[in-house]
Length: 113
Ligand code: 5GP
Ligand code: ZN
Image (cartoon, rainbow, N blue to C red):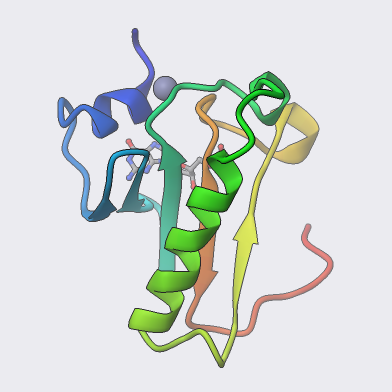
C-alpha cells in the first residue's frame, strides 16, 4: 500500500500528530493554508468520498466529533473554523485517502476558488 496517509496512520511516515484514537488520526498539514490547518483522517483507507460504503454510517460523525473537540480545546470554536472535504479532480483532491481539512485562525473567504 503506497498511500501516504495510511503510512502516516501506521506511523511509518512521520507527521505532526495532534490526536489519535482507534478510528481517527489528526495531523498538521505539511503546507498549511491558515494558521490552523489540520487533516482529520479515518484509519480505514477510502480513496474518495465515493468509496465510503453505505454500511459505514459512523466515519463522519467520528471525524466531526474530533474536529469539534479540537476546536473547543484550542479555543477557536466560537470564533469559527471550516471543515472541508475535497472529492476527485474538480473538488481539488490531491491525496486519495479521505480526509477532512480543519482550517482556522483567520477569516476564510467564500466562495472558495
Ligand atoms: P487535498 O488537496 O487532497 O484535499 O488535501 C491534501 C492535503 O494533504 C494538502 O493540503 C497537502 O498539503 C497535504 N499533504 C500532502 N502530503 C502530505 C504529507 O506527506 N504530510 C502532511 N502532513 N500533509 C500532506
Ligand atoms: Zn490510505
